[in-house]
Length: 79
Image (cartoon, rainbow, N blue to C red; front, top):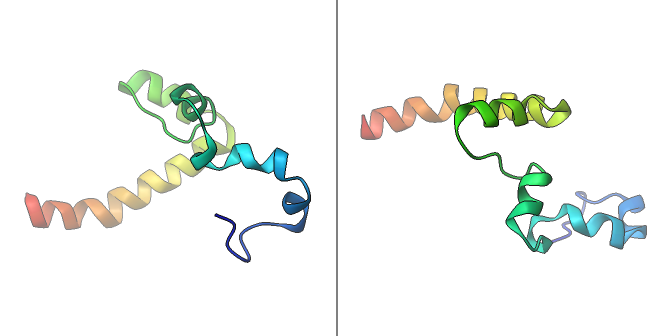
């Protein structure tokens, strides 16, 4: 859960503060959605949620990589 090099000294000194960031410790689906760990639903609400700050930029980057790198392989396999 805390692999070397993936956790800063600051976050190790504040385990109570950092622990809510780990999805394995989330206790409800509402916390998953509020924390933007998953963005699900129909296109309009997903687009609104993706547009929020840095989470939106990261989502766009991941979706672009998925579309460029993963989808062509899936199309070749299952298309």
